[in-house]
Image 1 (tube, helix red, strand yellow):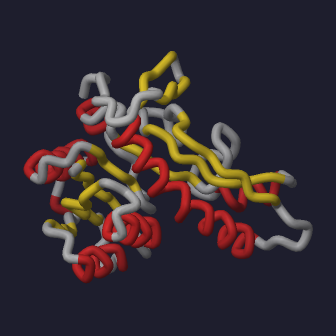
Image 2: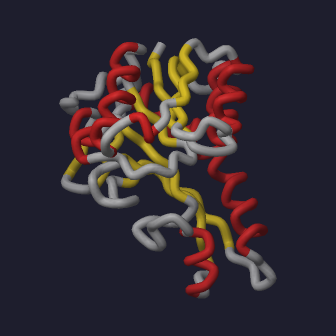
Length: 212
């Protein structure tokens, strides 16, 4: 079973759907570790209730800088023997050292159709710009904010009477389908990179040849 670590800062809705998909056998992963940088994150309660073996609140204030904090997180990820790191509403920017340590093994979901509308408010930015179509993107994480290679996307129409909340709610519905589906594809199928393009392998159960 492929072990994953989930890093979350908030409500943990994407963590919850991943845990549910794994429990139902729809996503062949084990959530072995959940880390949050917020002591009151609902994601911590969700993880504990689901029986995740390692559930940790790590206080960034205990560390001198972002690199030191990320190194502490990395030590727990290594100890739990996690193969993938899944960001689920994680609001801290990862240090370059962390990204390089786990290169091509960190994934994130963003509520917009990247490369359009990166950043902290992809939903609001798309709405303010007058986009007629938005959606969500699962991508690999690199040093560029929301700039890593794209693994999968789902489109969501922007309605004339949409508010930020109504559009975000419909995007989240698709996030909750796309994220576990992409995790399943990652661990069962694997990929290679052609520049910035993700090329999915045709053979199932392919062992990812990309170096860590």
